[in-house]
Structures are given as C-alpha cells and as structure tokens.
Image (cartoon, rainbow, N blue to C red; front, side):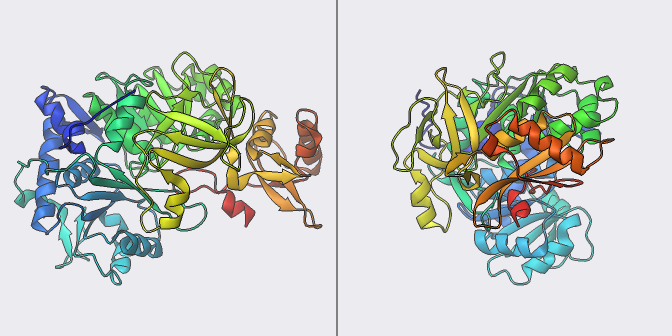
Length: 517
C-alpha cells in the first residue's frame, strides 16, 4: 500500500484547514463544557495562537512545550504551533517541578504554554531553564505575570486571525512523542509532518472507518499520543467532532460524559474498562450512542472483554501502537474481534517476529515484534545508540514479545524486559494475569518476577480483590491452585500480595517498575 503526501506539506493544513476548504467551516469540531466550537472557530483560534508565537520569535523547528488540560486552548495551541512549523512537545499537567525542569532542558523549548493551575510547579522549573524565553499562561494567574509570563487571553486578543501554514516539507520535524519512560526518563520519538497523517489514512480511515458523523471521547488526555490521535486528529481528518473535558478520568466521570456528549467512539484503557464494570448500577447507564470502544496501552484480558460485551453490548477493538510509530498498527477490526488477541495488521504496515539473532520465527512461536510503516519516527532525540537499536529505515524493533497464529492474528506475550525466566523457560506475566482475572474474587492484578531467596526468579502476584471479598490466606491458597489447574504448574505465583490498588503511570498504564521496587 502506497500513500504519498505532497513534497510541500503541513499537517495542520491536512487536519484543520482542509475542513474549511471542503465547506466544513460551520460544522461542530469541539464540544467542551457548555460550549461548542466550529471548524471556523478552531481555525481562527489556531491562527491567533500561531501569530502570537511568531510575535515571540518562534521559528520553524523551534520546540513549543504544551502543558494544558484537555480544552479548546489545547486544540488552538496544538494547531497554532503546527501551522508556524514549530515542533510540538506536550506533557501531563500533574507532574512535579523536577519533571518540568527535565522536559524544559531536554526539549530546549523556546516557548511553553501552561495552565495557571500548573504554574506554581512550572514557574519553579523555569528558574533554571537556559532556553525558555516566554511562558504563555492560560487562565487567570496574577501571581506570575511579568515579562517572562504572558497572559494567553491578551496574546490572543492582539494577534490577527489570518495565518497561512508555514512552507514545510513532508519530511520536516513536526512533533516529538514521548515514550512512557519505564526504564528512566522519557525520550522523544521525532516525527515528521507526514507521519501522523499516514497512520490516520491507514488506521483511522480503514480500520475504524471514522467518518464525519463520529463524535469521539477519550479516557486518556490529549498529551498522550494515543488520545491525540483518536480524540483530536482522527475526527478532524474527516470533519467529525471531539468531546473534551478537563476533569480527571474516573468511571463515574466517563459515564457522565458519555451520557452528556453522546460519543460514537470511546477511547479507553483496560484499567478504566474494569473500573466502569465495577460501578454499582453500571448496567443502567446509557452507552447506546457508542458504536465502538477502543483499548490500547496494555493487554486487554479476554475476561474483561466478555464482561464488557455482556454488560454494555459495545464491541472493543483492542490494539497496539507506540510513540515510535505514532499510533495503532495492529488492531482488531469491527465485527472480526478475537478476544485476547490484538488483531491483525492495519493496512500500510508490515510485521515480522524474530528471535534474539534477528531470524524470523515460525507461526505460533514467540519472538520480538518488528513493525514497518511510514509513520515510523526518525530517532529518539539525544539517544543515538538507542535509536540505532530500534530504528532502521521504516522498520522499528519494539520491546514487545508476540506470537502470530495461522490466521494472521497477533497475540501479546509481554514486554521483553518484563518476561520471566522460570526454571529456564520464559513465562509471560500477561498469561498469569489473564488467568487470575478469571477468578471471581480478583478485581485487578499484576505479576512480576521475585527472588526466591536462592537467586532464582519466580512469579509474584499483586492482587486487588473485588469489593465484599476478604483478602485472606485461604484465598491466597485458592488463587494459587486456580492458576495451577489452568496453566503449566511452574507458572503459578509463589507469592500473592494484596493491595488496595495498583500503581499507574501518568498514561494510565500499570507501573510494574514501582511494583518490582
């Protein structure tokens, strides 16, 4: 499959300006709180923000750091930055000052746009920044406004609402997407102007079949590339709409937002799918507007899939993507879901599963996934050796262990660095977790390797029990036997530690590193 973008290309024109050219200017693009914004509104806001950046000296390829909650201001900042040819970098709003200090130094951002609720932490980080020249503050913040801190509303009011996209090439840097940082500080995958549109053409339009009648809603926030795609870029690519909210995503909030905005596509993660199923009276909540639910970020246990279908009747498309490839490249397809699998390749992508020597393994055998497609990043910024190990042309060597069956369905076995070697045999933590989740007493669980006191690694399970169940030694014995009777005996967890909850990353993923520590 060949998708060729013009030599002179800017992704803001592809996602935003094209809607106005196609007569969609008066269509609703964004629903947020009690307001709606048309494509004309979004374009004017993006133009003003882009002109504001230019007035602050931002040029093509300068980095702009976005630290905003999901809001119309985020959308304006994202497209305004893209329109002037600057490089988008975006991070969570709940980080401590030391993390913002790291991101400012790593990105060498010339300008940051930050919400006032973050400023106490962010202002502290700016004191040691050697590159930041201005911080645009969204929301009232009388405390910090001086020559370094600029009021967003004043900047926008003074800026013209007409702006042509910068004359960028399809192969110019456009956005940095940060890895989850499971083994240290997050690194940025450097993406070109054409990378995100390529995945949009392949996955969003051909797998999701997104269209102008779709309204999207997301559990993850827009700073996370998974949500940037499904809850902003994908609907914009076809003249659809996105529903945004700044509140923290909880099960109750998600039910309320679905009933309020009537989305057709819900972007979720297994943790939230589980949480929504646990809410008392969940069956009575109205999810009838949804035609699809998406899941990614971590493996979706078959047990959760079946319970969701039984409760809500909405199909879940589980898939896998990455910051390195921008978005999902292997996915289940509507009407063709195989629970427990991650589905089949999206159009425009190729894959191979290889052993430690780089040789392709036979169908059914486990190995490392390599993926090829024209959305692959150029490199990790400032990490040459790591880049050489991961990127080779359009090919990206993932850190994921997979097997593929005769039908072309891919089955996730775990992260390479999380696989357990028990008695000389590799064991997938995901397989043990899926088994434990079939027990009616288990609400959540995670499996890591632990030392048995003799220098050998054995599985250890952390378990959150369902409400009303007692975390007792008797249940511990029962769970061990439960696994023994369903999996090979050497895979059962030698220890079970009960927890009230499990640690999560800022992207909602299970934080195994915290459990191992």
